[in-house]
Image (tube, rainbow, N blue to C red; front, top):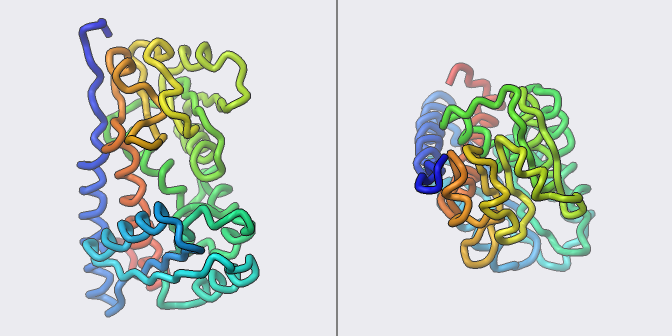
Length: 288
């Protein structure tokens, strides 16, 4: 690309709307066939304002998609044992088809232990070790929602991953690590980078696809981007700022996700789609 060209934006909002519309149509069909609406249970410990906002947004999206939502708000003093009991009860409740544990849960909570209390067939947020293993081995299961949204975006924009060098900046268990596994399953050559990576800029400059998921505002600059690369910014920092310096990357990349309007929109869409899929599996509704 020349310096006068700008990247094409990967419009997550439009694609997310199509995914949610498809999920809504499937939810309606499930209700028609079984008399039961798909149900997503959200669990939140404490009253973190950002978490409360996310939960309200997810419940509102559920309502628009014809998905029933059940919210369980637990006090800040909730113990890990009490949280695990709550998640286990939801896992055994036939009226609940998907479970979302809103995190962070607080410093006193072992989040990994809590995640593992979610039954794999109801892990529509893709946070359990079972789900990670399924992603790693390309087996049936639910993907982590943000990585799943990223893969759907890449597919929608016909990004050929076969043999391409994909650099993932970030190694969280529900974003960086799983998106690398999903890219690998598509025959990309994957490099993981993180806060201790030596000469990060040089590695990014070799990437055909960059996934920024480290949570550091504008960590990646335009000069780090290989001309013609695909840039997926999964970071979200205060002030609607991503992990990529958008303005400088715009003249280097071929495709780029905006913040907001890119990856974030896809996360909830995948959550709803997987909730409907979980309901179909549990209620025995094939071929949706």
